Amino acid sequence: MNVTIKPSSLAGDIIIPPSKSLSHRAIIAASLAEGKSIISNVLYSKDILATISAMEACGAKITKYDNYLEIYGTKRVKRISDTIDAFESGSTIRFLIPIALTNNLPITFIGHNNLCKRPLDIFLEIFDKQNIEYKKGSDYLPLYVSGSIKPDKFMIRGDISSQFITGLLYALPLLESDSEIIITTELESKGYIDLTLDILKMFGINIINNDYKSFIIKGNQEYKPCDYEIEGDYSQSAFFLVADMLGANINLLAMRHDSYQGDKKIIDDIKAFNGNVSFLNGILKASGNPKGTTIDFSQSPDLGPALTVLAALADGHSSFINAKRLRIKECDRITSMVDELAKAGCKLTELPDGMEIDGVSEINPCVFDAHNDHRVAMALSMLTLKMKSEFKILGAECVSKSFPNYWNVFESLGGIVIYED
Image 1 (cartoon, one colour):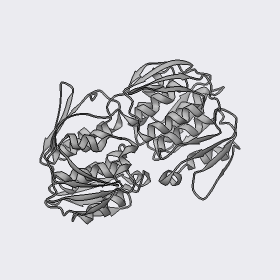
Image 2 (cartoon, helix red, strand yellow):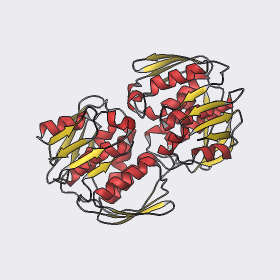
Image 3 (cartoon, helix red, strand yellow):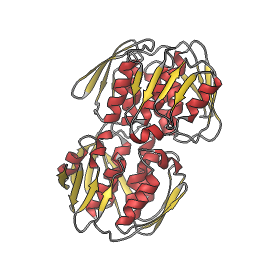
Image 4 (cartoon, helix red, strand yellow):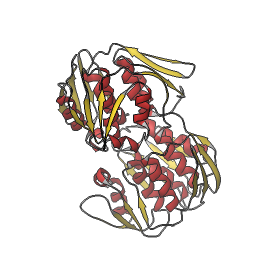
């Protein structure tokens, strides 16, 4: 689906969708807890449906209602299906590989599009060390694995995706004896590990965190059922806070001020762009005249596309640093954002691990490609606030990965969208 967007102002109140990161984690924990859990405020995006399907393949019984899940978990991972399809979800594949391997039966992991190329070397190194048989093609997926993960000391670099660490933190408590994860370099994305540890604690799993340098995991632990409500997603709030900085008047509702989400860093990033952020009576809002700044993405790569749009329209120069993990998302978000915004006359320079951006005051209508990346599509849509005439986004249906009703919400705020099949 392609969309043509006409210039418009955006205003109104919106409830930000539930956190995708927390949704994955809660669904998995509930599925590993013997008994009944209710997970509420669930949005059935493609990524979340992938995790639901994966946990059903591991033995959980999950019933979907309008906005909540009833989950009857399994004490130990079972093998209902010999294939787990992660679709395009990096969280699903990296969380589920070690979890599924707590059951000593062969399993094949598959995925689609760019997910097949996203690195899994950390797990392959573990397989080699523990003599776990595996086969893969030219890409990482499909991946056939036969064997069971064993208690061990796992040496993991801290500058790779925290998803690998989260997967191990879920799986290792189920093993028969103790394990340790040793982080060999400075840990990035600590906020995501905090989310993991908090959810695990709620569901009865205790992990010893030695200042993010190592994690001690006792074996023979059991997940306990827990009812849990998913909070609003700070990574999704980024697009609307950027819109506020570009002249919109949007109030974000139902956000948690005391959230553990690493992408809550968007508040500090907006302030760094000369923004004012208020959080009163549960309403989050931004305003200001954006000025160039330096942003470090080592802890928050998902904020990249939204903040690239803000930097491209800010007054002055911006530098994006420690952003190399933007390259291994649904698309290469550095190259894609540089190429797309250049079409509109923006001034961006691509670096190996970031960008240099000189803000412009005017942009030109053009045809953008979303590169099958939900965050790229949503970020580009915010250009409606600065365009002088209509522009087009190709492949706009990709927003369904995390925000299925995004275009309806965009229209509810005053956005003008023409849909094309």
